[in-house]
Length: 222
Image 1 (cartoon, helix red, strand yellow):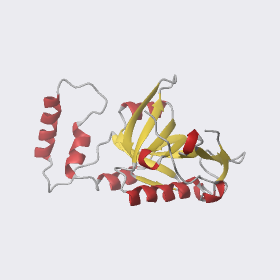
Image 2 (cartoon, helix red, strand yellow):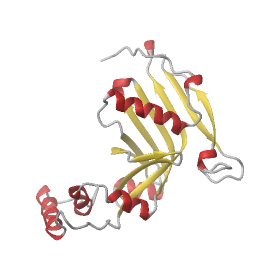
Image 3 (cartoon, helix red, strand yellow):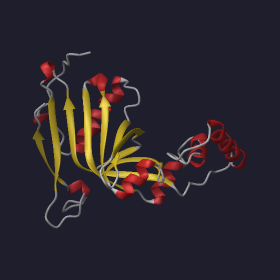
Image 4 (cartoon, one colour):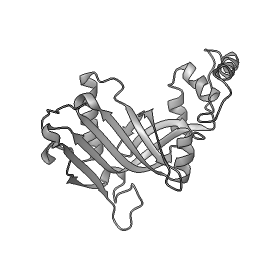
């Protein structure tokens, strides 16, 4: 199977000053186009000895500090991030012949930020966060549903569900962000922002904080 991509070339002069600004532009394009779940992204992690794993999760917010998603901290990805914070994100926007590829480091967000987001989730999703010991083996689906029913009886719709202690957010601070635009004859455009830290900067923090971070752009061969 093969498809010929036809799109307007992506030029350096088209880019925003920062990768997050460019991401906002492209993300807006996905919502206007009606793309299904454009915030779905593939998160790739690895164990301390480099064995990789990938899964699709939903991006819940982004700003100049990075990309945030929420999960069970004891899940496979949660455990791997704790032992090896280097991750990759992939936004596969196939109908637009676009991809965004992020590499960076992940760290937990604060509990206040986690709690604020948790309270916006549907009641059933809040119970699900308690019912599922994500990535752990279970005897059957019936066992999972029984656990959910017990929680639903304990916390009916009108009652606030507490935030599970093992559940929360990760923020991925980008080191590189590549914008991939498909074009004819496999001559795709690949423009990558690369973070430039000063010698005394902490990772992810420029001399003026995240919003003052310096970036350079390089074009990659397709």
